Amino acid sequence: MTEHPIESTVPAEVRDFVAHVREQLADLDAEEQQELTAGLEADLADLVGERGTGALVDPVAYARELRTAAGHDPVMRDRPAGRSVRNAAREAIDATHQSWNRLLDSMPGDLRGFLVALQPTWWVLRAGTAWLVIQDIRGPYIVFDWTWVALLVVCVIVSVQLGRRVWGFDRLLGASVLARLLLVALNVFAVTMVPGAVDRLAWHVAEAQAYQFASSVPGTGADRGASVVFSGPTT
Image 1 (cartoon, rainbow, N blue to C red):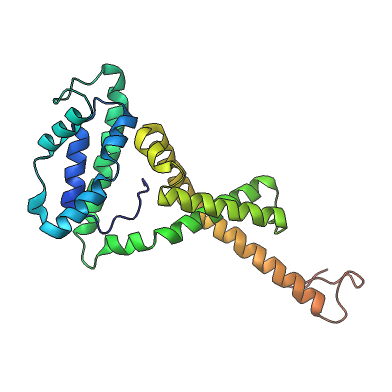
Image 2 (image 1 turned 90 degrees about the vertical axis):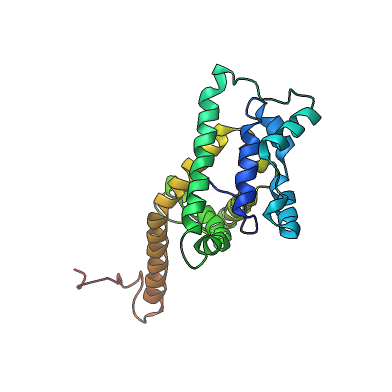
C-alpha cells in the first residue's frame, strides 16, 4: 500500500493528466522529473476548479513545453536499457495506485474520501505499532519510562511527517523507486503486526490491573504469598 498525501480535492482528470505528463519525462533523471512536476497537481486542480476540465490541454504538448523550457529535446528520447527495471517498477506502482483510486471512486458513499480522512489515524497507529515491535525486541514486557515515552513521541512525529510528505520525504519518494518499495513493504509489515501489537498492549493493561488489584486487597501481597489468578485456586 503506497502512501500518498491527502488528495481528495484533486480531480481524477488532473491526476491522469499529470501521470501522462510524467510519462513523457521518463528519460530524464528522477530528480529533474520531480522538479518539473512539483506542485503541478495542485496548480491544475485550482485551474480546473475555476474553469472546468476543459482547461486541461494535451498532456503530450504540455510535456513538450516543459522539456523545451528546461533545455531538453521536446520529444522524449529512448529510455536507457539500464533504467528499464526502475521505470517499470515506478510505472507499476503508479498504475496500481491509480487503479486503487478508480476502484474506490466507483464505490458509493465516497469511500476514498473516508479513507483519506482516516490517514492521520493510520500514521499514529503505525508509529505505535513500530514502538511496540521495538519493545518486543528489547524484552518480554512493556516499559513506560521517560526514555521509551520519548521514543514513542519520536516514532509518532516521524510517521506523521512521512505521511504528510515533508522533511524531504516527498522528493525522496518521487526520485527513488527503492524508497517507494521500501515504504510499501514497511506499511504491509505494520499492517500485519497491528493485531499482535494490540494483543500485547491488552495483556500489559490486564497485568497492570491485576497487580493493582492484588496490592489493594487486604491480607494479600508478598508477605502472605498470595496471588491473583485467572481461573482456579493456587496451590
